[in-house]
Structure formats: structure tokens, C-alpha cells
Length: 514
Image (cartoon, rainbow, N blue to C red; front, side):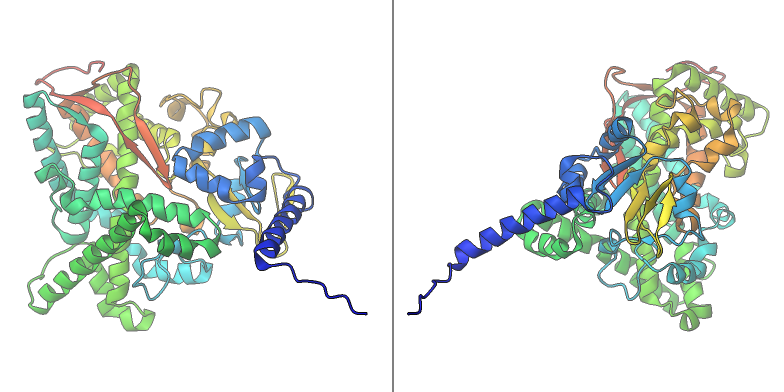
């Protein structure tokens, strides 16, 4: 006699199967996975949810510093990913010939209209090298310095606005004004005109608000499992914050396309003769070798989109850090202002506007800029890479092929073995008295190797020009010295809440503490 066995209903089978899967996965991940020997948060060892929550919290760099202090140089931050706080790992992982490649963190940032991966999102090292070579000269320091008058236009506007603020005795958020300044510099360098952030003292066309919605959403998507990203980005569109972020993507893409279309139309009418900016340089690349290297209008638009996405937040964060830490450190503020005054009096610094090649030779200014970028790097998440074929040994530990590894500048920049026991403090003098060669070797604020930020020279030129210009013209002080700034780490390490009093310095006024 046959006994029939009823098949369990699906609503029972699926939950049981799911629970069984997770039990097996947890046991494997905690006990048998190649990374199971490395310490870290429990949730991080079994799910990427932990790192997603860290990005949502916007303070991942603080958590990561605490974890390394507790567990040591290697911390497991996801089932197949470790963060490494060993200074030697920078060269090991990010040098040109290392063999480590970008992970799938990056493609989410790629604009929807791109025909090729852009410089940031290209995972193939050879392809990246070819594409970077096409435009690299446009971002060289010599080319940026040739456009210094464009930056001067923005600096002049900032000085005029600060004069008005001083007369009104207003208190400003310095970080806001510096982002307006940085955005307008992008306008001048790429399009030969400012957007109008500073002139209107407002967020022009809501671009900054768009970025503030866009970057958290993109970074959250980047750190979650790749198979969940479409569900998050598309299915999540029913939720207002994510929907607004998706709209923001389109607004930045549209702005880039409009800028290229406008210039293209003017060129056809012969109305751009003699105009020299980065956009004209990009059109020049297209004209001279575009067909040979497959560089057309779409690729120009991608370059503009990248500048709009990354050109203001990072630079503004760096300059904000310089001025904030100076106002927090009276002796450094006084010492730097005296250096600037003396250089101005001796003719070493030009009048009425500072030149980059002059300012970059001031030793204490250089020390203050480096120290501020050390304490507050503009990118403050682990920069992930895949271990190459055959595996690799880092910090005396062997990692198999495909393991995700990375270094966080916000962690490594505070390593006392490199920067001293006072590495948590703002001490510009370390760059005058210490082993500067070794410290420079471990500065990671612009990334490393062939993937060093292509906009690095734009950022450096801005900060070395505008900081001495501000300090020799105005006296700055925090409105409430008991109130700390706020920082928000969504890949870019943005600042806010630097409430500042701005006062015009009197002629012949000596350097004074804020």
C-alpha cells in the first residue's frame, strides 16, 4: 500500500529554506571563510548591512578609527572586505604596478549617458590609463596656473562679498561660502564664467542641494551588494528622499549636457575665438584626435559632469578645514598671518591678488595646508581594491584573490608611527621639523598611484591662493568657540556649521590672534 506524502506548502518551504541558508552562511562566514580570522563587528562578518549603516550614519571614519584602535591594523568591515591601517599598505595596494584593481563600488557613479567608463568608474587599469592620457594635460598644474586669472575673478568676488559681510557685522557659515567659491571657480575654469553662487549668495539652481541628496544615495548603493543596487535605486524611488536623489542625478546630467551644447552652438557661430578654458581644451582634444581615440561630445559631457559632481565639495572641505583649524589654534593663526604679512611687505606676494607660484613657496602656509588636509581628508571612506590573481601579502597576512582590501586616509593620516604621538592635533610645525619626506609619502587625501584625483591641481591652486588672500585682508574668528563644526562623510567628507565673524583688517594692522 502506497502512502502519499503531502508536499509542504510554499509559504512554509521558503522561510525554512531562507533560515537554513542564513544559518549555513553565518557558520561559514564566521568559521570557515578566508577572512574569518580577522576581528571586527559581528554584523560586518556576515553581511554588508554593517557598512551600509555606517555610510547612512555619515561618521564612518570615526567608527573605523575606533575599530583599529581596538582590534589592530586589519579589521573586517564586510564578509569579503578588510580595512587596513598599515602605512606600508598604501604603496602595496595603490602603486601603479601593484596589480590591485578597483572593485564594483565605483560603477554606480557612472552617468547614464556615458559610452565608456569615466576615469573614476573605469575598473580596467589599461583602459583607465588610455582614457586619462587623453585629457591629462588639461589638468596639469602648468595649465591650471595659465588660467589663474579665472580663479582671480572668483577670489575678487569673494573679497567683495566678505567686505559687505564685514560692514554688516553678519555671521556666516564659512563652509557654505567656500563651497560657493569652489563651485564658481569650476565655472570660471571650465566655462570662463562663474555660475553665480557668490554673486547671488545662494545655491545657484539648487546644484549643491542636488549633490547633498545625490551623494549619500549613490554611496549607500555603492557599498551594498551589487545585486541589490537596482532594487534600491529603482524600487526605492517610491520613497521621497531616494526619488529626489534620482531627480538630482538628472539635474546634474542636464546641466553638463546644456553647457556642452551651448559651447558647441557658439563654436559653430565662430563666437568662441580666443576663449581658453578647460571646455575649449576638451573640444580641442576632440578636434585633433577625437576620432583616433574615440573622444566625442559624449566624452566631453562626461568630463563636465564629473567636474560638477566632484569639483566643489572636496576643495571646499579642504579650505574649510584650513580656516577652521587656524581659528581653533590661535598661535598658528598668528604665525601664518605674520608670514603672509611679511611676504606681502617684502614683495614676495603680489598685490592685489596672490599668485599660486608665490604662495606655494611660503613654508608655514604649506605646513598649514598639509596639516588641515591630514586631519580632514576630503574623502574619508576606505578606498576599496580587489586583490590580484595569486593573492597578495599585506602587513604580514596573505589575502586570496578577489578579497576586497583598502586604506582610509582619515585613519592612516592619524597614525602616530608616521605623524607623531600628537597625530590627533593640529600642529603645522610637524611639517617644518619632522620627517617630512616620510609624512608626504603617507598622505593619501588625493588617492594614490595612477588613480590620483585628476582634479588635484585645481584644488591645490585654489587653496594656496585664497587662504593667504583672505587672511591678509580679513580677521576671522569663530562666532562660538565652544561650538564644533559638523562633518558629514558620504564618500566626500563635507563640512558645515563653521559660524564665522569676518572683519576687515585695518591698514598696517599686525597679525593678531582670532
